[in-house]
Amino acid sequence: QVQVVESGGGFVQAGGSLKLSCAASGIIANIKALRWFRQTPGNERELVAVIRDSGDTTYAASVKGRFTISRGGAGISVYLEMHNLKPEDTAVYYCSVLPTTYYGDPSQYWGQGTQVTVSS
Image (cartoon, rainbow, N blue to C red; front, side, top):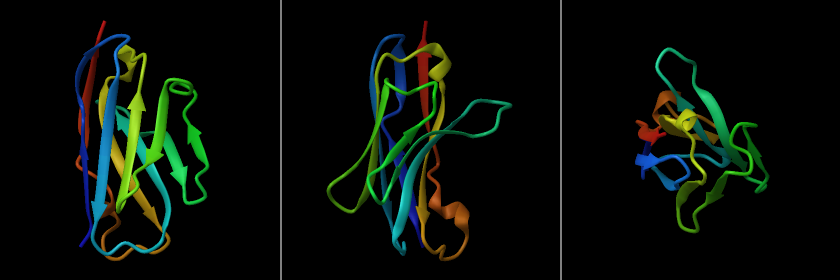
């Protein structure tokens, strides 16, 4: 069984910073990528940032230059540093592990989400 757990969300004023963390454990085949998504009510989940096994990263245009995705040194972990936050960054942020092979239900490769709220 796979477990993916996010932490670090919270409430911050516009212009502030937050750092999200994600740790995954369980039976996970080689990792193709680690990803952060976000979702607001009534909208589809949006890809925010991805870091591939090569180390290459990609960001959504709306966060480029403000957010940084990085992998942790131990185990399967990924971070999302968010700076100069804007009210439109308010969302539930989800961590997702993309393995080369899924074992069991793919939904278990997603975290439960962590709320980020940015006030104006």
